[in-house]
Amino acid sequence: DTAVSQTPKYLVTQMGNDKSIKCEQNLGHDTMYWYKQDSKKFLKIMFSYNNKELIINETVPNRFSPKSPDKAHLNLHINSLELGDSAVYFCASSQVAGDQPQHFGDGTRLSIL
Amino acid sequence: GNSVTQMEGPVTLSEEAFLTINCTYTATGYPSLFWYVQYPGEGLQLLLKATKADDKGSNKGFEATYRKETTSFHLEKGSVQVSDSAVYFCALMPSGSARQLTFGSGTQLTVLP
Image 1 (cartoon, rainbow over the protein chains, first blue to last red):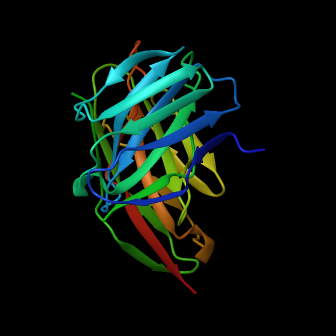
Image 2 (spheres, helix red, strand yellow):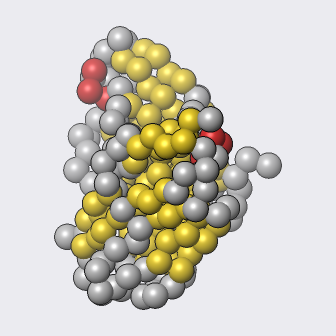
């Protein structure tokens, strides 16, 4: 059973378009995250939601908007895509209580033409 | 702020060689420390963790010891296999209410037969 699933796995689109990436977790965790991994493999957190409420919002352009319809889902919508948005985006989830590790999805590779 | 510094890669070893990947951190208080592994085309998986000073995390032949005095959490394995080829990330989670993971830059390991 897939614990953290992201769709799509690959996303190729043109500059200026709007796209969404979906994420679902079936682990019963109360916190979900979005990370961006650049071409040098550097990982940076973008957002974190706890029980559907935004708790971390790093310096990310406001073209990126997370949406959490319920605790098991955290979707990422990106407006007016730019070349620099090309990266792999990872969703993760965890249970905040204790030092519980984060569980990651397999990533969505976004390529902007 | 919190930060994690990893030895730069890439690291190339022959099968059965000894592996060390250095990791040092900067944080206030007593963070929890993690090693994650990313196999090609996949998301990050937790490899091991340690939550307090002198704890040793271990998994799949990998070990790392939480050294408060040197603020280090070096990853070691006595005999690497080709299947260990991956990117390894050191990470910390601060103590207290902010449960955000801070990652190191990752170290690419290639093991040759």
